[in-house]
Image: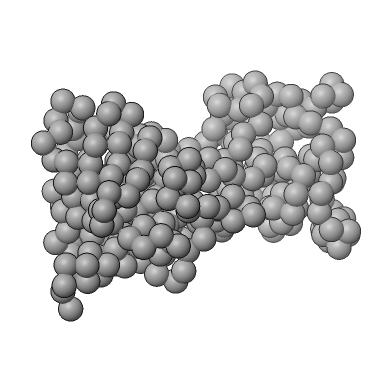
Length: 309
């Protein structure tokens, strides 16, 4: 059930889920199955799954477009009578024993528990051709998409150890791997391992354009040189969407991610988190699993809060 800002008679929920990517969708399905009144807030088109292809997920035979998988998940959510408002949350605060959330249009919702599943904003190159070719050779998750580039030339772009590990992973699939780094910022051990795997490390250069009409055909570097590649893996790190949590004293770790325990509970009682927001590996399987755990934990929290066993 999608509602516009005019709706708004549903201002009270047992559990509010912020984010409707795979982690948030799974959390909504699981919480609703346990009889919770669930509200999910967010914009599905913002999920990185929209730009991915999936070929290594349980129950999926052959590649499937991520956007189609997400559509199925959203249908499951609606079949559970979960209310969904396609608006971003701009404020999160405590209101006595409850939590209050405000959306971009000013809608206020009160809930017993909150599950944060906003994902992590993958840092982009912000160069010509990048947006047009997302999901068409441009990827932000080597672990997710590596299998689609067997026997092809690929470039990994990034300075840190995440980029180095992505390049090493791609040597198991790609014909040739380039690592483009403005400044190498990983250990000499990793550098030697890259060389031993025949990864071509190009330091001091940056990508200025991703070439191709319907698929990636190459990249242009700032010295005017061109590399013919069919895949570009952008490994520039991620920014957790943490603007909401600072008012509650819920702060990220040194890498910018939320810290959770095995129950997906944060340091603030009643707030749980799951998916890419909690850090790597940034993968569909991890997000779905954490979404399930977060929902079960939130359900148990709400039940205990109300005096249940």
